[in-house]
Length: 207
Image 1 (cartoon, rainbow, N blue to C red):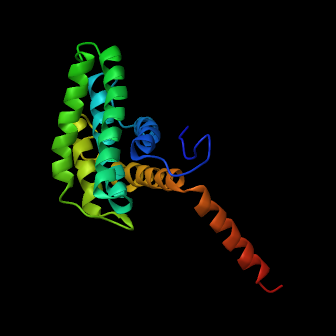
Image 2 (image 1 turned 90 degrees about the vertical axis):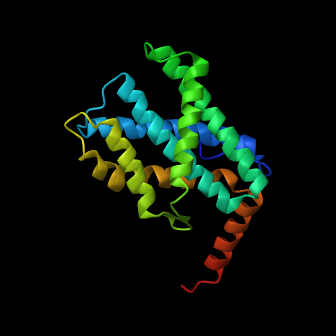
């Protein structure tokens, strides 16, 4: 899976909006990969409305994960700039794909508005769950699993998909977002400092 974890041109810290653009690319890819893996695990997610419902829920989950990471690393103002830009970047791509590929899915504007409305609704629901330095608490994973179970409610996978989400897809996706965020926010100065520290440790070690 192709994700962006380093800047093409190294340099100083990026603005929250610029970081959001890079994270948005990854969020879309990670959600698509989760869907691909879920289907490969023999869960039925039909092409059409169910397909986009899956992507909506999982993508929103990842946006809210990224927002919590930003909360730990940014000022309140920068967090707002980052999450707003991230949500709009992702919504634009999602809406373009849905309006183009899903017959009767709505216009570009309608698809984006629907996505943003659902994001705002889920943001209020996920707000009750903690996200610590160790990552999301159990309830965070349990809720995305519940949301995904609603996507397949009418199928044979109703109930079974919860374990797939909680034990595999959601934790792996969170790790990818965490690592991507860390790599993209690491400045050249901090990279050089790490190299020097590693060299100092090596030079002071005993044979």
